[in-house]
Every structure is written in C-alpha cells, then in structure tokens.
Amino acid sequence: MGELKLGLQLGYWGAQPPVNAPQLVTEAENLGFDSVWTAEAYGSDALTPLAWWGSRTNRVRLGTALCQLSARTPTAMAMAAMTLDHLSGGRLVLGLGVSGPQVVEGWYGQSFSKPLARTREYVSIVRQVLARQGPVSNDGPHYPLPFPGGTGLGKPLKSIVHPLRNEIPIVLGAEGPKNVALAAEIADGWFPIFFSPNHMGEFASSLDEGFARPGARRSKEDFEVIAFCPVVVDDDLERAADSFRPMLALYIGGMGAREMNFHFDVFVRMGFEAEAHKIQDLYLDGHKDEAAAVVPTQMIENIALIGPKEKIGAELEAWRESIATTLLVAGSTDTLRMMAELLL
Image 1 (tube, rainbow, N blue to C red):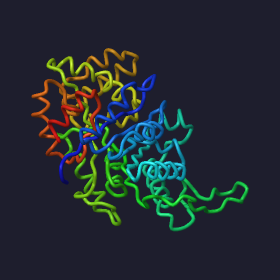
Image 2: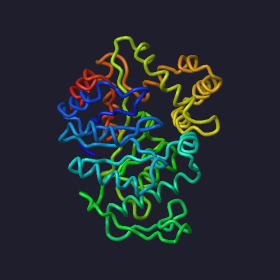
Image 3: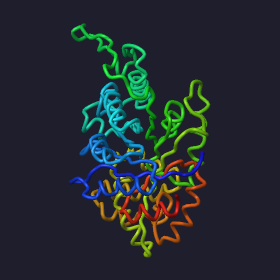
Image 4: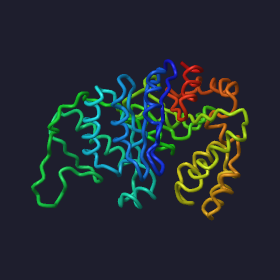
C-alpha cells in the first residue's frame, strides 16, 4: 500500500463559510499533505469551495468527500468533474455517495429506493462521459438517456470538451456491507465516514467480495481507503472527547430515522449497540444535550485521535498498520503541523 498519506478534510460549511479555510489549505500543501477535501449536506456545495480554495494550490489532489448523487444528474456530475480536472491540471478525485433518505427525499425531492443499483448506473454514466468514445446513452431504469417519451427529440450526445484525463479516480462513500462491496468492485477507493483501525475486520469480507467480482477495477494493493481521522489535542482527555460528543450524537441519533440510520449501524457493528440505542432514543426524543453527554469516551477513541500529543502519537500506530491509505484530518494549523510531524 505504501506510506500512509495525509489529507485535509474541510467538510461542509456551518451557518457561515469557515474563516480559516484558505490558510489551512495553504498550510496543508506546504506541510506535504497529499490532498484537500470538501463535502456537502444541505447547505454549501462541495465543488465551488474546492475550486475556489484549490486555485491557491499547485500540487495537492482536490477531492470531494462527498458529492451527493441526487444533487446532480450523472452527466452534470461528469461535466463538473471534467471542468475542475482541467482547471486544476488533473488533480481531481471524485468522491460520490448516495446520502440518506432524509436528504434525498426531503431536500432533493427524489426517491431513495435502490441506492446500490443507482450508484452502479451513475458511476457507469460518469465514466462513459469521461471516456468520450461515443455519444452517451444509458438504458438503465434510474438514469435513462435519452429520456424515454418526452418530445422524442432527445438524442445521445458526446461531450464538447475533451477531458484532460479519460479516467478520473472515483471514490465511493459507503457504510453498509453491500455498499462497501460495491465500492471495492466499481470504484478506485472507499471513503468510510467512521473508521476504526481496531474494527476494520468487519469490513474485510465485504471488500474482498467486491475485489473478487468479475470485472472489478482494483485489487487490495491499488485501492485507496480514505479514512476520516478526527484529531483533538488536549491534555484533558474528557475535555477533548466533549468537543466531539455532540457531532457523534447528531450522526448516531439524528442523521437518519430510527428504522434507517447507516451511521448508527456502523457503531452497532463496532460493538456499541446498547450505547447507540441510548444515544438515538435521547436524540430522537429531543434531548440532544443528554444524547451527547452519554456518548462514551471509548466510542470516540475508536474513531478519532484525542488527548495529549504523546497518546495520539502512540495510537497513530494502529492507523498506520490499518488498511487506510490516507488519513483525513480536520482542525487548526497547529493540528495539521502536529500530524505532519508525527506521520510525514
């Protein structure tokens, strides 16, 4: 797999644009980070900040972690990818994910059904546009091209723009076993939103299943695993954990419904079933602060590096020995410098 790389995760915006993002991006490139990533939920989009902040860089790869499938048709996604790849000199990594039913149906007004089949079809069309071997058509049920019915005037089209690269790396966000297997089969990498170096065995069989499928693009040796690695440096361990509890409570409790929450399921698979139920029950009953308060420190330590610098340095070894190929780090310039010192 080679040396473990570092990426800067800028995520999506809160109520306002983050004030320090340009400085973080510059610092990350200067420190030798491999990549810079943006995200989207239902506020800021992933592509505009990536282009804006990425224009200040020369070397780092520019990735979306993630662009939501339902936000753009596959051809619109391919157009954006081609455009940004040209503008950045071939540095784009296209991260895609289905999101969840609340966002897909509530925000984008689309059906959430058949997420795996939709993903497969979507990626296939994006690749068809980028290959530019002929007019683009698709007879699948989710994104038929040309549109069936209508005026009858639609016809297959080929991109006016010649892509800078006919293949742009595609990374899939996936949490469920079937989705992880699909990522290993059709993508160039996998983005697990919650990564625990001590619990990746649960995903090994799914990855192996995907790699073994006929026509799989990659093998274990050349597949990227881009792991979100939250870092909070603080000599007081509980205070470090406190800064992270509300975010975990939101994802486990509120980023989904009681009957369907992929983040919740991940923590159940890591062995925190009782705790996850407690957090979810409190959160969905409107007790968000109480939900955050019951997030165990151990749960956070499984998926993040928190506490004094020495502790973080020691625990980093497990990440180094894991299947991760890139650690996505967020935080201050001091945090970025510390991680570069420890890892690079």
